[in-house]
Length: 368
Ligand code: BG6
Image: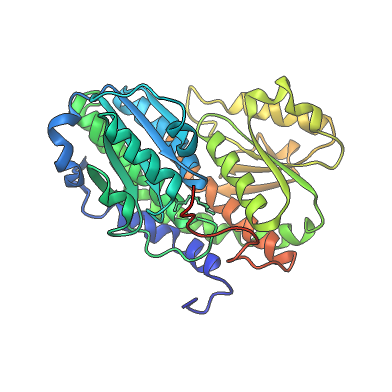
């Protein structure tokens, strides 16, 4: 039931804040994170010295996002790999490796095969899944369920954000176990997690102009997305949504990579979305991203910046600015992704396409 919305995807984007709230519910208390979901692997978790995240599609981009948070907080090295590549390259695994699979459906065959393989090799497997009792969680040592609710539209939206939140909870849990963050530092991150849902609601409400933007771009043949650090997986996610939904050639790049190749693609009129980090953090990459914007602007690109409220530095160089509420650097991407989800949907709608059922795609791919 679309509940009055024009598509399941529109409904599911509107449910992104709720997906966040439900995924942290019962897992944070008094500034601390308690993941009883991890009890089945608790005795081995202390020894974990490496995390490998495996997933496909959107879920793999959530994995890249999680890498930044887990490494920063828990000081454990994290690799992220597409499940189908991982499975067939003879990866080095042992009983101190924690393999984290991410799957909305819990039925993706590529991910399932990788999970089975990792366990055969002696790794412990934790799965992040949105579907209770699906095959992947049944084949895993432990499960963190994302409580995003059923997702019907083929392109994943609310599940992506819930997967990011689940990985952040895992990062804080590991940091608690390993003592890499103080109680106060953990409490600060928990407060950010608790503040996320209302900020996401605000972001979605503020982005109502996106439908107009999408109409203006309905004939566009190519769109690029740039992001740095945690903005990078969001650039990949923004591009994937345009491929899946609007059948437009789209690519996401790490902004620092621009001068090593992609800048050659910039010609007058090229539309480029740029995810701009907050200027408030002393170690912020904001000046570097603004300079990237200047470089592409000078070559005629049309820039759509996603930047926090009050960031005036982007105004002289951007054709459009989509605003997100203030958040700390690791939490900005979970806000910035919502306007990109909306943009993919609105562009598909502006082209008269089926937003929920794009051609050639299936919600759950149960063949290798
Ligand atoms: C693809 C879907 O086939 O599978 C994507 O079209 C999805 O939207 C990917 O991200 C992974 O699916 P799942 O269920 O394993 O998260």
